[in-house]
Image (cartoon, rainbow, N blue to C red; front, side):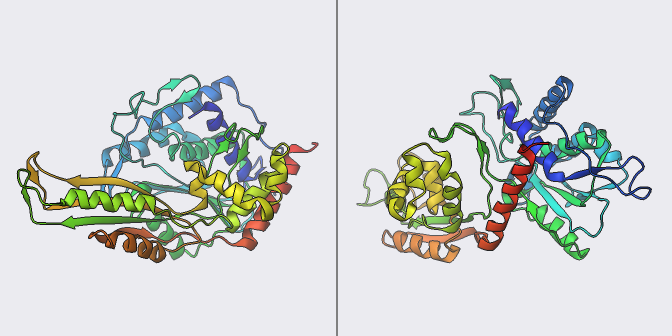
Length: 421
């Protein structure tokens, strides 16, 4: 992860807190608004931020499956953040709780209890990282050519450390927030979050907490991602794709390779997988979040692309085909699928009785789990497979009214932060 992204994330969290100053604490004096933290850090602070992120990456907080995690590393991570952010843990108006054994919940009490609190959400666990395919060891935290390498640099220790680092820097500067907020760091997000985020949610609901909004892991600040756009831009996600893990299984009588049948279990399953890969899910190009995104970016393009992007009613099919040609932008247009596991065979001369594959679908918010399952089942059934749902989660729905209002609020905030002081 590039160092500039670390600093940008920290700054974003700082600006998000909306802090105010009080020299004598919450009760003694009504706080007055103070200037925001300047957008630069000392060399010592910059160095410390890098080293703190590296240290977090070096702790292998791996989630392998529901109920199976590296609990030793998770416990070590809890001790690590306690040492890395001492001001956070010793501040009187911040309460820290451990939930579900390894998740962390911080309650930061603001000066104005009439304001509805919000939550900054992240997670500290990562997926497994076999060393094959990595240029450096995946838990090294090595810095090279301006990048920090390792599992968790993008998903999602970068956010977790940025949030805590921002709060630490604010507290050192004697700032406190006006609006109360929570920081939630889950420990099992990669395997559904049952013992982490779900337990934190249940705890807050039991306490009657109602949040104004949640800021979760999102897109990136992209610089040079689209060649025609010279400015960096940030993706703000207003919905989340669902998921479906589909197990395809073929059962046959086992045999010997010396007298093979016309079709083997592996061959049948391979044909089913191939058919699924070719059966592209329907395009959702006209969906509201994507349309709004393109509208926001339209005037940042140079001529003639800006004309095309501002007239999607006419050039929509052209833009759609262009987006479908690249894997990253294609994922914005439709439900995607990928075969991630394939298991069959025990010996070179034995025809296996069972062949099994797992297909992972990422479901577009305009579709449902049921709809995707039916489409996949119709395709797989024609090739003698038995599809079974392993895990499915419904896409989160966006609110057009909320999205429009949020975009307008962010535009106003950006104008204020970049305008005359």
